[in-house]
Image (cartoon, rainbow, N blue to C red):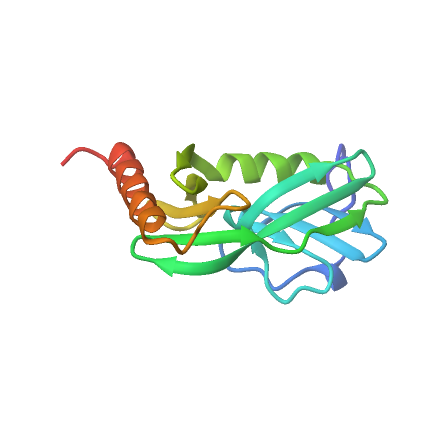
Length: 173
């Protein structure tokens, strides 16, 4: 036991099935169960898999409640994924400790590239994200509400925007 530990260790019964390189950063009890933040993502109460930092679209902390909006895959395209917001999960944290700060920091740090572009029929955000344990960036787009996501001209423009973004961050040959 460390003399100046700020928080007790995660009880063994709440320890998720971690990967060999995964380590617990912090945890918090909520009314729904225990949330566990690791270097790879967050384990939500009752989840059988971790939600990777790169898989979270939005995080909000009210001082009592942590709201997490995951990304859901709408479509796979050549070289990138089209994402939409998944259902937001809200957790009333009983003793938040460092969990809200760690979640926000890790989600923010996963974003390596982001730009927003107006299109002929809507707008799109192009995002390159770091995935823990993986080389390179994972590329995705998220269309603004009302965008014509299946219109050929929008798809072509999106393909060009993603290609340009990927080339802008690629190391020189």
